[in-house]
Image (cartoon, rainbow, N blue to C red; front, side, top):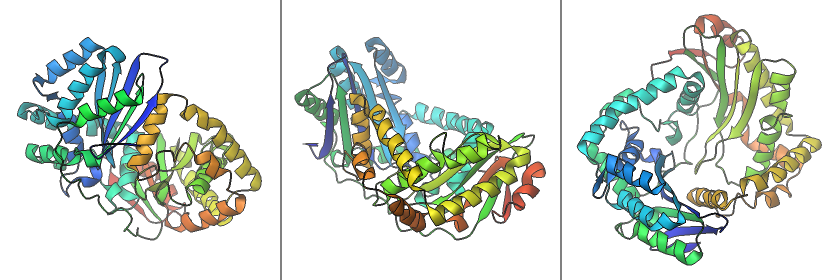
Length: 430
C-alpha cells in the first residue's frame, strides 16, 4: 500500500499489453443517502459523469471516443467508484479527464433534470424483470431498518425530490483524499502509478473524510414471514429466502464460504441436487453471503414453476434447517475446499483482477490481500469448524421469503409451506 496525500494506492503491474486500468473508490455510497432522499449517491455519480471541466456531456464522450478510452462511475451501497481504461500512450489525457470528473464536475441543471426524468425508467425496467424485482423487494424486506435495506436506486417519490445542491454536496464530501482507495493496473510501474494517483486527486480538497454509518448495531426482527409480490399472469415464481448474516471478512468467513459453496455454490451442491437434479423444479438454485463492508444478507434463490413454489420453499427451509443443525460432512468440506482453491487462480489471473480485489478488500476495511490469501485460511477449516459457524450464524427460524408471482395462483401453497404469515404487496408499490 502506498500513501498519496492520505489516499491508499495499490499497484499491479503487467507489461503484456499497452493498457492501463485505474479505479478511484470513495468510501460511502447509498448507505449515506439521507432518509427520504434514497438514490442521492447514485444520482450524484451519474450526474458527475455527464460533463466536467470545460467539457459538457457530449464533448466529454467525444473526447473519450477519440482516445479509445472509457470512464465510468459505479455507485454501490458502500462505495462510489470512478473507473478508467486507457491505452498507455493516452493515459495522461485520460487521467486529466478523470481528474476533471473528480474535482470539477459541471453538475449542469439541464442534466440534473434529464436524469430525474430518466431514472424512473430504470425502476420500470426492474418491475418488468421478475428476478430484479425479487432482489429489490428482498433487499427491502430481509431486515427492515438496516442501512442495506434502503434502495440504492431510489423510489419514484425519493427520485422526484432529489435536489441538485445535495448531489453536489454528496460528491464533494465523498471525494476527499483520505476517503479514497485507488488502484492502478497494467502497463505501469510503481513510479508512474504513483504519479497517476497524484494527478487524479491533486485538485481535491484536504477535508476530513465523512463519518461512516454504523452497520453492525442492528438486531433484525425474529420469526419467519413471506412477502408475496403480486404480479399478474406469472407462470413462475422468483424466490428469495434469507436473513441478516455476518459481515464479509469476519472470523467465520472461511467457514461460511465453505458452507455457501457446498450448499448452493456448485452444480453438485445440496440445493442444486435437490431442487434441479432430483425434482426439476428450477434451472438453478444457489446461496451466498453478500460481500459488503457491514453485515449483509445470507441469501438463497431459485425460480420455480408457479405450481411448485410452495413445495420449493418448504424443501429449502428444511434443507437450510438441517444445514444449520449439522453443518457439512467431511467429504463436502473437502470437495468445496478443492473447488474454491482450484478456482481462485481464475480470479487472480490478471493484473486488473488483482487490483480490483485489493481495492474492494481495502474498501471493506480488510487487508488488501484478504481474498488472495483465502486459500490459506480455508486450509485450516474442518467440518467441526463449519458446524460451529453454522450454529452461530444460520437462523432457519428467522427466514424471510420473498416470492414474485401471482398471488391467486401461488398464495395458498406459500401459506402452507410453513414459512410464516404471508403478506401480499403489489409489484409496483415500491
